[in-house]
Image 1 (tube, one colour):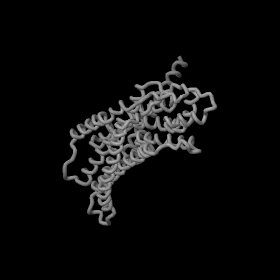
Image 2 (spheres, rainbow, N blue to C red):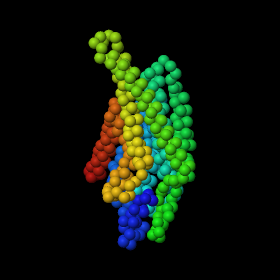
Image 3 (cartoon, rainbow, N blue to C red):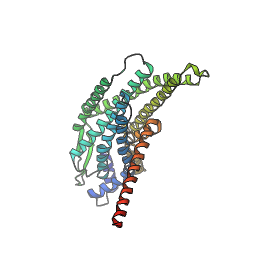
Image 4 (spheres, rainbow, N blue to C red):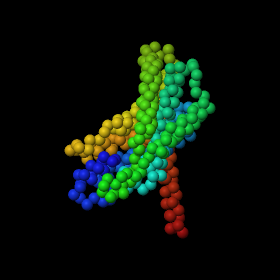
Length: 345
């Protein structure tokens, strides 16, 4: 942010620059990112609420469903807290109202991101044990609950240092402007912390990739057996279970791929320095600000992935929507009947 502010002050040196004008110029760069976030926000709220309700209350209890509902819980927190505070940062880039809001926003985002990463690793391990080693150790329901609690605790513990890595006040850049931004400190200790987070993220993706390669290879071998001409070798129930297993694997692999694709741009862009001398700096910075917030895809689009990949989830969503529509129609009909009775009387 320092480089952007200096660039704008230098390129507009002839203008009577005020804090409001400076904020407006950076806000214009943020507008595409704001539109992007506002389009995804309602999808994330409604979708994650539906995922938590359906996977906990409507579908048969299993460790996988518990992990997926916990993942939706992280995503919902990110939508309710992280995205809302992110919008404050975008609307008021150099007039941030509160250091407390800044700390809470960064903490919530890191907590949800680390939690999602660890939860996806737990899902990958559960799938590997279920598909590749079905006769070996499997997580019990109690162990699944304990693992969920441990992941929540570790996510909070690993994200707490972010509170001390925040700075809110920036020097006035010799223009007597009381600039206030929500930024990370650039000290060596915090660079080491963020490097450790990035390394953990990379290792998590590598382990997930290896586990799902093994899962996919085993599941594919089972699935190919369905194409055998002699149907007597597999009864109908077993064929149905294999197809269901394939759909589950496709779902969890898809949400892991979405996680990787949504966070990778942020990690890559954080390592690439900004070229303030570029002729197209404003356009490049606008695109950069959208790409650096693609992590929002992870907490808003997972329910869409479940909708495409999980038939049971689609059925439950249709049932809920149908029930709400039917209830609304019956309520309106009752109101009309009451109105007609009053008119007759």
